[in-house]
Length: 84
Image (cartoon, rainbow, N blue to C red; front, side, top):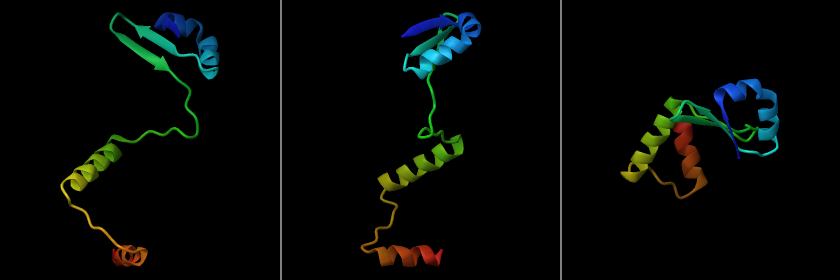
């Protein structure tokens, strides 16, 4: 793991990215109480918008509360979807 200040990161940005690409954990300290981790993002990574996260949480709550419909066959599910 490599720890640098935000100033050091700016000065050595290219080498920090190279280290992260090789799997090294890069911690960038900003002041005494804040820190960030530099990690590569690949095609399998994705981010959800706050709205999408909220919809997922509402759906989870509905499931926990038993507010869902179960279909026994694929045909039943297809008929429901076609009715929408």
